[in-house]
Amino acid sequence: MPQRPRTKNERRGGRERAPRTREPSEWEQRVVDMRRTARVVAGGRRFSFRATVVVGDRKGRVGVGVGKGAEVAKAVEKAANRAKKSVIRVAIVDKRTIGHDVTAKFSAARIVLRPARPGHGLVAGGPIRVVAMLAGIKDLTAKIVSRSPNKLNNALAAVEALKKLKMPESKHSVQQVTEAKV
Image (cartoon, rainbow, N blue to C red; front, side, top):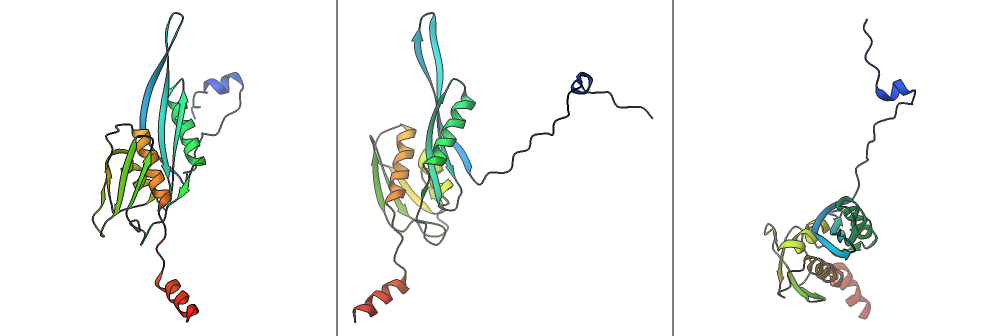
């Protein structure tokens, strides 16, 4: 019976390593923006990268993070870690939309979020769409009111708007309050 050829690691007497397997994360991540920045040093320019990443679990939690690094992969990794640290809870009604209209401003970016009827879908542009989708919102109408093309500021404005959301009072809690007053 012929033997299989030995691997380079076996020939050197090293130990066999188990293949790396990653367990699936509860977080889904999307890169919203990637920028190359340069600084001038003696002998030319040094380039680094800035990544803006949105993470969410599609169950009402979402966060935005920014990371900088000499390589794209490092910048994305740092941004994802920072996004996980800045996660917020979103008040989602009927597991599909938001409870009321909300406006928000972050830096020069201004946005408006409005609830939508069932089946309407996500009508939102760019980073707002990504933030809403990863938060688990299925029906929403959004508008970037400002003229800011900055994706980072628009994503952070979307998070600010989602922070302002309040859960609507349920009928039972309203009834209990009125009965208590009587």
